Length: 93
Image (cartoon, rainbow, N blue to C red; front, side):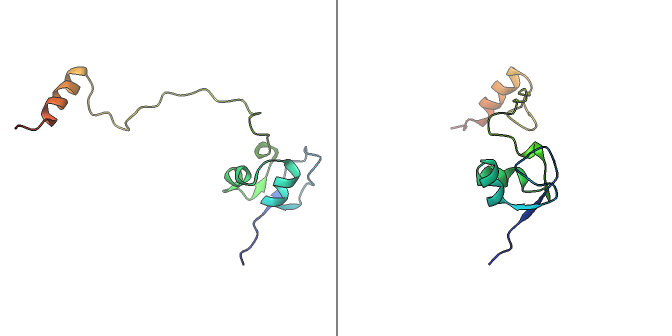
């Protein structure tokens, strides 16, 4: 049997939780109404629980989308380079 992971609550503004008390994933899920999997993905690297991690799903403001490239390092810069590369990839016969 494994050890149940416990998180210390440090926030103080949530009336459902007691400051300094330890809670498991299941207890936090039952008290807050946030699913077990969501809590696990939010708290996997933390040792404490704060009010920032206990927001309702969909209530947080979405961050603006940033520009993302399709490739990490684009090799072809111009349209002519792309066309040349397509021709070079074709078999000779």
